[in-house]
Length: 108
Image 1 (tube, rainbow, N blue to C red):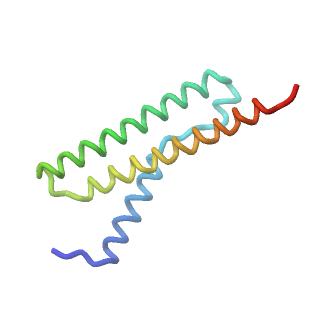
Image 2 (image 1 turned 45 degrees about the vertical axis):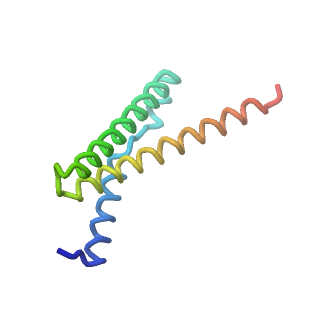
């Protein structure tokens, strides 16, 4: 069964949209109400979610490699979720490091 390139594009774009919806989220209002504690717990929850997505993707890859599943769609979705969540987590880490560096360079 050959896949047409347009079908492949539609599957990929659908997986990207679903993974973007599933990416960890934060709310600014939570930080304003509860301060640093809420921000720290949200960051930890986001890291746990990212680890979960990475683990799910690895499990799907193992199932695919062992021939336990022939559904490549689930593998594609799991990989895209993991990729999106990891990109989000790395972007937050980079912003936090930039903010830390800026605070260190401030003169009192």
